[in-house]
Image (tube, rainbow, N blue to C red; front, side):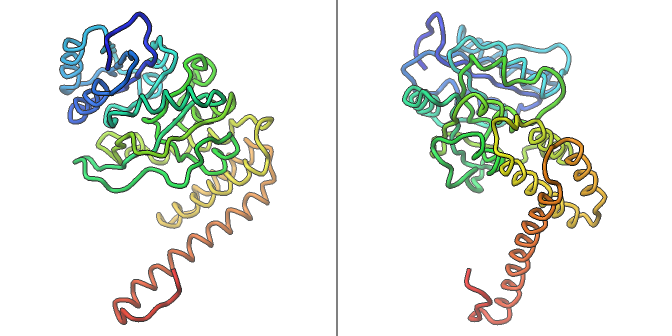
Length: 323
């Protein structure tokens, strides 16, 4: 971090609520960024009831003019807080991070350099190290992602982007955030891709905490699924190939089949199918057919893997199928 100037290059937007366990590591990773430009750090605390606010105040006092806290008097919810914090930035670029994640030191510098070298891109993301609550590494967020891609690639391949790695042109702020209703981060990524190409730095510049306590995904899985479908149904079909949308909806239905099968009921599947039928101008039969093929492929792979484990216990030298 360099000395404060009049206007920051990047506005770092941090959303937090009851993240006393993680917020210190998050904020420290931001102020420790190695850059040759000034950035501001805006933190919106959604009326935390634990020690989160005290830690935020500590950083604001230690880094005056850089760390700028906003304390809501009432809880406004994760989605409204997300929009609110991004409306406060003054930088040329805006970067997002959730309060339970953290960055590695060159995250901002690498992404700003990418944007300046790829003028056709309106946003850039990076890969991430996936960690558990105790910082134990369990994997990486994405693999085999193109360095520059369009909206069709994004929709066809699903939400492979880590939200806490997002950096975008702040001039698009008013065009990509929905003013009413809840939405998933995937919808923001899709909206950004309607205005230009997206970039991806295939380096682990972020630590993404999987299923931390209080995670929206962890406590509201079915609701997140409905917001994911909303993102697909709200796609501007004038900018996307119909086959791409059908492919994405087929994958959604296949995942719904798997979820329902695991939980021993198919009532939810028919509800998803009805929502798709009423909300999308697509060939529903075609979508269902491809969803069924995807489901069979997934199921057969699971079955083979289970049989392989059983047989290997009986005879470790026997090969059921080549992997």
